[in-house]
Length: 264
Image (tube, rainbow, N blue to C red; front, side, top):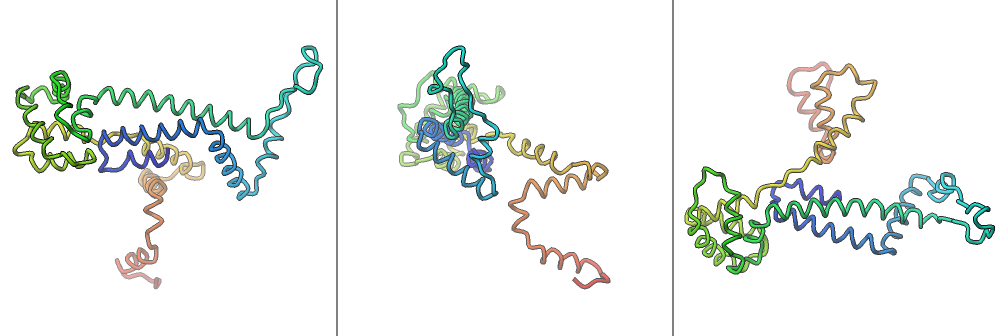
């Protein structure tokens, strides 16, 4: 999910590729959910990670999960007492999380595909004249602004010419590049293609910022100014960039701004 979020936040991404990323991620999650050995590998990796932090996972599990016995009045045989093992419990927890996650992703994916399906069918490689239909063209034209007047007979002709230029392309980005090269000759097809290449909007960055705010604005920093709080949030949110900054170089640049009493 972290990799998917990073892909969805990339500046060069378009809606069609975003749908492909989400579909492949959903397939991977379904495979993990149905693969018991793969789930055991996840549990083993979690145990190894906790061991690196000096935490005994199975001991903590036994402390927090007592053995659940069947009441005697229902069954006096202790051999069939309910006993949930360590891996069984966490397999159940993993499956409940994955079921919820895949359900939400599937609903969002179906909604997104249903919304842009006319454009997706037109420009998703391999492009072909067989993708053109009167109904599909009418549905795709509904995405254009109302003030943009288009002759319904012009669009199929422009799309056929564009398809001839994109017989060997493999991605939507390649179709968009070919459309951009011929935008003066095929303006309507280029506009339709640009609509499909609209960048998807995510709120992952905003969510992370609010999570960082809880960590940064603690009771020791309640009197700081808004500008300082904004700067600290920026440094914490963009940690990947901040880690590559050379502090020695920044200190030297700061020292030569004006004459200082201390040599740095």
